Length: 239
Picture 1: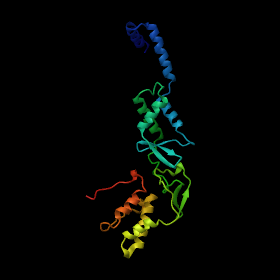
Picture 2 (picture 1 turned 120 degrees about the vertical axis):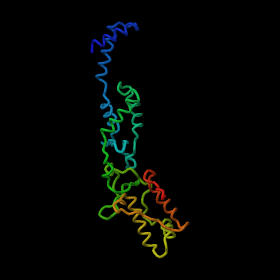
Picture 3 (picture 1 turned 135 degrees about the horizontal axis):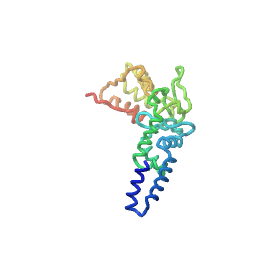
Picture 4 (picture 1 turned 30 degrees about the vertical axis):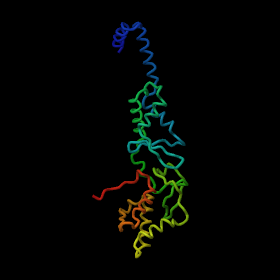
């Protein structure tokens, strides 16, 4: 209140060259400036506007912001710490965005504004390549244009080849028992396709590779794993 302000101003005037009246005037001016300063919510909205491209804004999922990359058609993660750093550089001259705690709080406001935890759960099944988004439609594999509506977070760095993968087929041919080569290769191709297109969970089946040492199991797995993002790969100890 005014009485508290005057009491503090009297104390300050005793240790500075300013009078009580001058201190009260400066305090009033500072409060006036504060009223016109953007709030954390205002700054959060300004930042989101600055990151809007063709009407598409970041979404908040799994503790991160995800921004759509129009170049390769996937959503890329952006850590909240990075968002805080961006806020400091862009709005550091604002009174309410001048220190680390401000950056963190505003980043959290941005996250809560854009939070959609099921955003990627509703993504269509398919795989991105440089040329477009491949998906199964009416039992046919078709290519669609890249779009944020595809909600993909992973992309292959190569496009499908129209020819047969002769070298890979030879590896598979040399790896499987002679008595069931065709059926084993066909089943393996189905499993790999389901994994690439993200539909493997629908079948609730796992692929078990059995063979003697040097039969090509590791070679096949290296080829397959190279087609997936590191974040999508893991290993589980059999022990």
